[in-house]
Length: 395
Ligand SMILES: Cc1cc2nc3c(=O)[nH]c(=O)nc-3n(C[C@H](O)[C@H](O)[C@H](O)COP(=O)(O)OP(=O)(O)OC[C@H]3O[C@@H](n4cnc5c(N)ncnc54)[C@H](O)[C@@H]3O)c2cc1C
Image 1 (tube, rainbow, N blue to C red):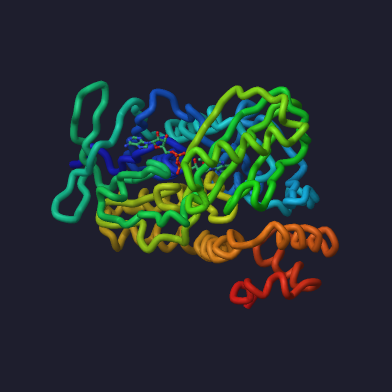
Image 2: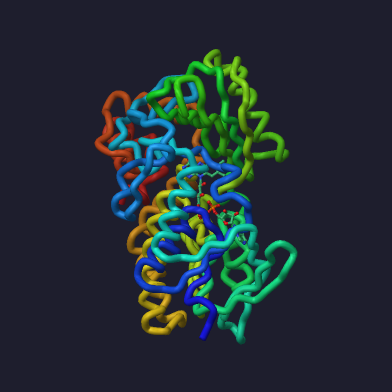
């Protein structure tokens, strides 16, 4: 008998949700995490919406929430804002969380459901019989050991190695990568009731965000498409320039700095194999327009956990058995991800002038809900010329 039914590599949102739903439904689960503390250091803007939390069984505690906001403020390159209420603003607006507590809360839920958890334990390779994954080689406190299991879950984030070791293609083209840099700035005078997004050439191929943590502190960050950077340091330079030019921010002092990257690609072809499954950023499930990935990681994690519990009961971790996960997460997320990827391909080509016109139009006509299609349709009513590039999405 294998040591575990399921070994989950990585205790981020995707890993903890997978571990929780697998253990809750009877699987013997181990989750390993290479860091010494779950959720730290934080590499995230920490914006989420409330709308999906119930569907995946997350009950937030007060420590996990830094701020509730009323909605999103989308700012054109010329400074014109367009306001969206929380219920229309998509999966990254509504709450600004404390990932350091949020990630621990999800890991606690996984443990309560029956999962084992080991910190400072890194996966260093997979164990295989032919193409079938049979376990994972881990290193912990200088010692290397093998753990056998029915299925290894790669929940190891953007820099995932598990997929590569398993021979699953998760490679990203440079145009499908957003490079990010963020400060937690204090001593600033932002609007603490809105998550703010600035579009256009201030952040080529991406946007600048201000996500309020409290009255005088916010996560102020930038994401830029990798192909738009001449030098890796450009991303920080763009953000510094923006902060210095903004009277609300320029007296700010950084409490934290983070850099990182997110994928902004179309859904990848395959996320399962014999004895292997990928979830969250490792499976490239991030929204290609917003770069937000917490909600999709949790949604896909729940599907993964439930499928893995069934596979454990049936003692069948073959690729055919795990395809139920592949189909499940695609039914939930794939159309949206694919459409947003197509829209992103066009959005990164728009000029400041076009963004200014788009925001002006949205202020004139309003929008019924925050989805790529709803926004494009709203613009089409007044300025069909502005959206002719997007005809294939409008149908
Ligand atoms: C700057 C920035 C800002 C962002 N802002 C937002 C936002 O505002 N809203 C939003 O929804 N999303 C945001 N995202 C994206 C979001 O952070 C991710 O989508 C989310 O964390 C994905 O969860 P995950 O569990 O898949 O991966 P992660 O949270 O990255 O977790 C992976 C875990 O695996 C561990 N690990 C890695 N390798 C190994 C190994 N070999 N062995 C053991 N453990 C391993 C890591 O230590 C980590 O704990 C942002 C990302 C960045 C970089």
